[in-house]
Image (cartoon, helix red, strand yellow):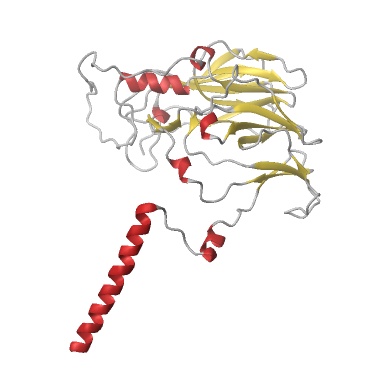
Length: 366
């Protein structure tokens, strides 16, 4: 019995010393695993692949390490209306990105041998790449570029690269045209023209709204419904008019069209709005354009704010309103419940310019 007690004491003392040593190390720096675990965790991820529309080339996109640095997680983040926004990028926060790209012939084995691919060059060093897409004819790709340097954090810039030469170039000059990427980004109107959402000129150099030190009045929420309905709870909702102004400041955008062959940039549409979608028809003659508008809500996220869906021509002129979806605070909490009115409005792939959408016959309440 005495032997077992002394053995237990020795073990306790040993564990105490080990724990104390670990605590001392943790107080000074992060503890690192063994080299074998590091090798497994830091193994380079396999590249992402994107096939050209003509199916003759593959775009190989190099992904970053699976574990981003801690500095990525301490950047400022705004939580507004259910969205989490990086205020410096004007984009969703904590975005992943690509580190590089190359074109590979379709008949090559992936990953290609050294010298068998065509790297994309002309992108600034230490850059991150997002929102990559092919032109309809497969001769170019478009993508967003931002600096990974924390001291040079700015919104995205729009680039294109030739799939024949690998040369990349900026097509919208910054700081005149910074990309707005919280919701809508860009869409190919043709193989030579892109429509993009940019930061409105009036907001580019303006400071965001500042919360007043002294409230201008009481905080009041009014519920005028005559029926009693259960509702879900959501994180990161708007709380007051200040949050509404901040949400508008970081999500509003203007639309511009840019012609790749000439570099000509034109306004597309007339007003700055909270654009959420620009989707071209298969024949490239029309677009579905949707945007959010007031009144906002303090009870539901931005996906349920009032939304207008419109049909535009390829020249940026409104043809007709497809749907107006009012504020949806009354969607039942039952499974399979949905918003009233048209939803999932999409182009048919087998028709030049025909829309298809869904409407719930039970008004969204199963």
